[in-house]
Length: 74
Image: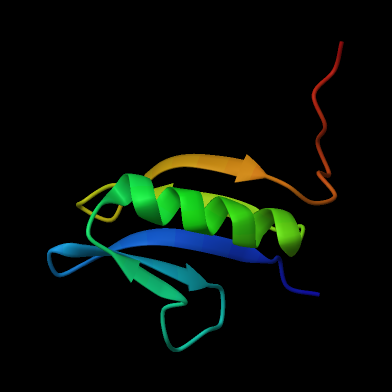
């Protein structure tokens, strides 16, 4: 089974919210902050991982809202 992920990626001068395997963006926003808010809701609803990218495409942060195979200890 493939891992469910929701990505916030740069798209031209905008930011796109894309799910893994999707050919089209779910939403395109003018700021990264708006895109992260939309993507977070989608990730929570789908019990998926949220992956936020920088302008250069590298990964800035990850958040898991599903069944985390490595939950925090303590």
